[in-house]
Each structure stands twice: as structure tokens, then as C-alpha cells.
Amino acid sequence: MLQEKHSEDIFVKSIGEKIKSIRLSKGIKQNEIAYRCNFDKSSYNNIEAGKRNVAIITLYKIAKALNVSINSFFEDI
Image 1 (spheres, rainbow, N blue to C red):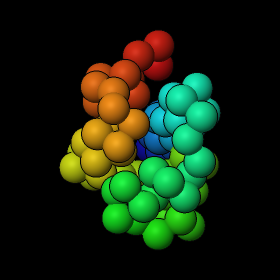
Image 2 (spheres, helix red, strand yellow):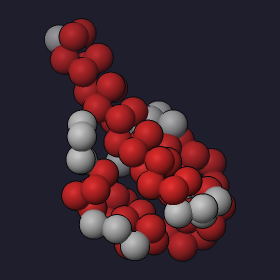
Image 3 (cartoon, rainbow, N blue to C red):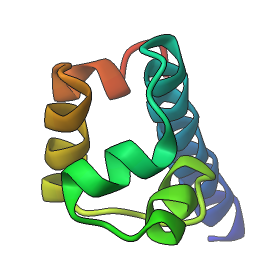
């Protein structure tokens, strides 16, 4: 059970890192994505840091704000 939880934490962190990588490649600041998604900056920061397991609709909003497919968050994971 503990190993499964650890694997889930790694997966959530990987998604956050992927979102951050895409955002940085587009030269967009965190506060801009947070604004586009109607999130507060600290909540968005927690997503990128992998500290928050988010709903699929949240990933959809972030993908839309970054102008990418939601699938791009799962590539190479």
C-alpha cells in the first residue's frame, strides 16, 4: 500500500513537472496561467510542484490556457 501511494505521488509530481516544462517553453509566467484558469497563484504553484492531485477538468483548463492537448501532459511519463 505504501509503495502504491509512493507511485501515485511520483505520477502527480511528473504531471506537474510536465505542465511546468510546457509553460516555460512557451515563455508564460505562472500568474498568467493561474489568471487564465481562474486559479489563485498558490494553487497553480502547488499543481506544478506536484503537491496537488487535480481533477481532469483542472488539467483541461490548464491545457486550454497553454494551448496544448491535454494528452501532452502524459507524454513520456
